[in-house]
Length: 324
Ligand code: ADP
Ligand code: TRP
Image (tube, rainbow, N blue to C red; front, side, top):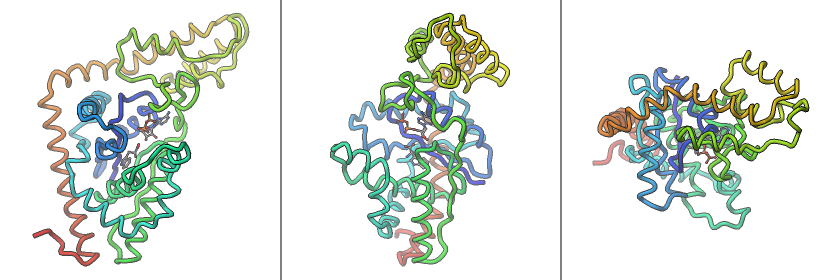
């Protein structure tokens, strides 16, 4: 299996990112090829402050390493350290039909809201296709909202192959269903854009405060409560074992437990779950050179594979295989 995924450094990672994406990256490391990158070129479509982008990239690397991405089992790199990917983007763009991009949600959503969208956002799925195809990836772990982009990638690979002969491998999305939509503090899907996130690496005090702010209904303390429709319980399910989940569900249904207590249970579960990651992050933070070495070494490995595929693509469409 050749695994590949990217995550945008557009802000601090939250529980939705972890359960919807990062946890899967970690489960899939150690395959024949396990490539994970920080999608800094994609982030340029939204982050326009260089200092903020630099900080976000640093945080993304630290967070991923802290959460268990292991450089001995996986290749971690910055997207922009493999410039061949932008070359492949152009080559793919020449066979991309406009209507394919018109229906992609990132662009469509912005347009529907009347927000000016630039060509970068419009062609974003082609850059993503290049990210995937340039490493002959077979398996792309992503959250449900990214499945559409993997479909576009398959369409483009098929169209390229139909035009120039078998050159590109068709990848498949790998989605973890049960955590496809992690709810945020307002019970809507957790997302940076909705201001409802629970960041993974937050001071315990702030984390508790955020958890205590999760919206619940107004069922009185003594009354029985419905666990499945409560965001606190839905979030707890991500951390707890089946026995722990059943125990908390029983407490909901029995009545006599306030939401504050359920939130405290959630807070403790999160602290336990991420405890080791907090410690690892502190260690990596104190060793920035080591982190930079990991990213460079990763880019070096990724680039070797990217060059091989781009040479194949260049020669398939009639260019010299290698630039002189
Ligand atoms: P955000 O919505 O906060 O901007 P991104 O779009 O950068 O997050 O998402 C990065 C990855 O995390 C994607 O693969 C996405 O599907 C996944 N993800 C984000 N939010 C959630 C969520 N609430 N539940 C499940 N997965 C999520
Ligand atoms: N578009 C993805 C997101 O917003 C990030 C991404 C960029 C990606 N290139 C990719 C994910 C290639 C998987 C494979 O989450």
